[in-house]
Length: 432
Image: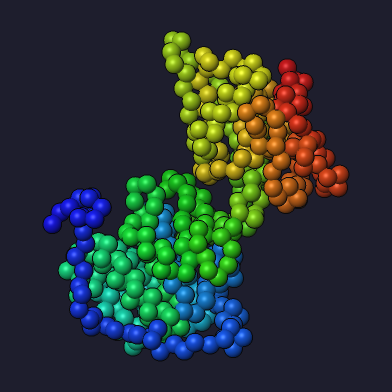
């Protein structure tokens, strides 16, 4: 039957087994109800992954019995990072089982040698049968299991091919039982679709304890790990890494890294203190405005920011400030390959565009931030104290901020503005 009789959609039916599976591990039925006061707190039993940036994203490390999911684009560095984690845990904690369903053991060994991640207690197996892997886990009793990837795993009792909804759901359920029943931390690698979402049923994300996304462009060296679900910590932390020949290296000072090649004598360049979770980052917003060739339709192109938001900023500049952008091509770029969404970027984008139009350089030791409204007003943003501390640490002398955020005890000189006109008067108009 190709059409579902309930919802009327085509090709949504999945064949599943209804008989008892061979690997029944009923850890749930053995659990006894206990008062909360008598339940042992396992927060103190976390163990480190060996990578400080990853530990912060996880909330302090891995919890025994947790089941985690890591997703990202192909080639972004998921397997590289997890092999580094496996090596670090094997060196400090105990046996680690690395299950690869996509590579041969020889390929895995070559990557381990390149990353200097060869450890005696790091055990590798090339296997795609979920039942066989569960038997190996029972035999080896590791402290950590890494499954690369969940889309290649299959259960013999389910007749659908690996990667299908039924196989992914059944395999995840088996690994969930193994993790909770044996107090073993298990990390699953998940493929993503063209839209950037994790492939497979949504129940995959609901079943795990945390979901981490790898972000960044493959052709750049910058990588960000972001937590979108975490039962053991905050989802506002991010980890920042640089891809190198020796694997992923944590970036201790990402702001300095992002601004290291900034052209200080070029128009259209503005520094904005951006909040990535609870961590402030200084990013460079670059704008270029040029006449549209042959008087045709002007181009609007962005890299790293939302195009719709950028269109609003351009409309405010045209309507409220009278900037003639109807016949101009406008390009905007976030240096470093980052993808940013925070409204605090609005004023920085507006000043960068105005700077390029007027061909005037903004003071390189002045940062700009604030949310721009449709009437040209500047609205307050969160995390101002952390942003200003980061600016002070890196030697910035001044920052233009929303008037509502001015407190009077800032570590650097601040100038509060209420409208976009005031901000332009302080940065661009006074130099024209």
